[in-house]
Structure formats: structure tokens, C-alpha cells
Image 1: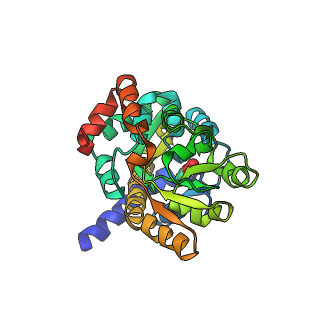
Image 2: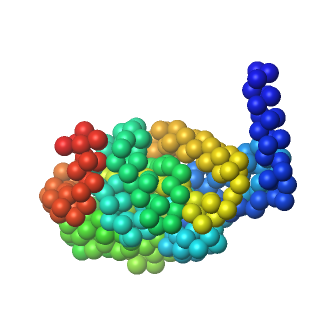
Image 3: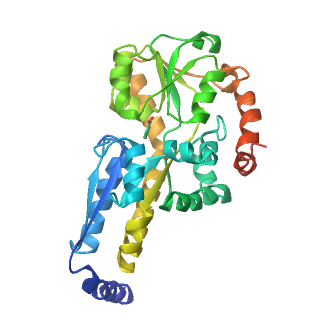
Length: 321
Ligand code: BEZ
């Protein structure tokens, strides 16, 4: 105990001269304040303030306040933004290998997703963020992907021609095309209005967002399809990171790791909790498996194994191959 207190004090004494001027950092997110990523970012900021006695201040900018994820990625690259919790979308648009993480039915549940994100293929992808001018700090995730529909679909064939929202990245758009649907790329902040005004007939989303944003008020059926995991990447701006004192990098890196652990832990229960709340509100949720989507899943793998070699490694690590 004495030793830990002493070391902590020594750390602060070491840190103080470099931190004396104050270091202002910003973290950007696409998710609304009620989302777990945003809540964990706020807790991260509070811990950093406490640990540095205010010498390092982290401002949290949720709900796309800094623009789209594409714009945030550019800000990270120029050093205008310090940190972000990002979906895989913009990574996959710049380096297709990242999109392999969104392979349909790669993992059955959150526990398996978490294990896969600790294996070598995910580590390889994390390191590839350097080529984009970023420092990859680690993976988190959100809930498994489900399918919310304005009108019920008794079978997969009923999806034909329906406009289903997907993330704007090739692998997701391709999956929905193969189901017979018309994939419609839309970012998170656009979803409520798009569903309300009929721009889309349904969406790929999770239970958490469906409950928090009450998308189900605008729909008639939710398919618990559990068809993809949804990793998050915590990244820092490479430009900004190298200008920060080493003790700030160490502290921020360690606290981001703590946030990622908090997020990974939270998602062990989030899908079940929000699914129950949606069902308790009287909204129909129906479990479907890969067979619902006909041959879309095997055809997707045939195409993407050739285009993104890391997919085969991910399949092997997931125990799928
Ligand atoms: C989405 O675009 O569906 C999404 C983005 C971030 C977290 C969860 C969902």
C-alpha cells in the first residue's frame, strides 16, 4: 500500500513539470450521450482530470458534433482532433481489410466477439491504423447487429427490394445486396428521420440504439438476427500523440484501456437488457439465424475471402473455418 502510494506520488511529481502548462485534449464520437461509448468517454475524461489534478483536460464531443466519422478521421490525421472512438466504417473505406471484421455470422455473440478482438488478426488491424496517421489504442465493441423493419418480413425473400440502412462500407453494402434488399448507406445521426420519412424500409442497428432512440416507434418488427459483431476502434491522432509528453501518453493510453475494458464488460449484458425492454414495451422481436438470409452468407464469404486475405485468418481464429 505504502509502495503504491509512493509510486503514485512519484509519478505525479515526475509528471507535474511537463503538465504544468495544462494539456487540453478532445475526443470525438458519433454516438449520442446516452450510448455506452459516450458514457465511457465522459467517465474517461473525469478520471484523467482526477489523476492529473486538472493538468490534463479531456473534452468529450459526442453525437457527431465534430462532423461525420470521415471528417473526424481527417481531423485526427491533421492533428485538429486528439482522440476518437470510431466504428469500422471509415477504416474499411480506406483499407478493405478492416471490413472483414464485419463478416456476417463470423461470431455468434458478444463473448466470442470479445475473444476474437484479443487475437492476432485484430492486433494486425490495430497496427495498420499507423498507415492512416493514427495510433491504435485498442478495440471496444457495441451490440450485435439486428434488423429493424417498418413492415414485417416472414421470410428472407420478403426483404427483396426493401431499402435497408447499412453502414457506408463495401462489405455491409454487399451483404445486403446479396440478401436481395437495396442497401442504403446512412450514418447513425440520420436514422430517425430516414425511418420516419420512409427514406428507408428498415435498418441494420443494435438493441441499444433501437431502445435509446426509440426507432421501434417507427417500425413493426425487429429481427434478432445477431448477424455481425460491431467493433469500435479507439484511436489517437499520430501527429498530436508524438507532441504529448511521454507521461501524458502513458496516462491517457492506460485510461483509454480502462475505458475499453469497461465497454467490453458492459456489452456482455447490454443486448439482453435492451432486448427485454423493447419486448416489454410490446414490440415484436423474432430470432432468426443465418438461414433466414438464404445463400447470401456463403456467397459473401466466397467473394470476400479473395478480396481481403485477413478474413480467412479471422475465420480460423473465430473457430468458424
Ligand atoms: C451505427 O451506426 O449503427 C452505430 C454507430 C456507433 C455505435 C453503434 C451503432
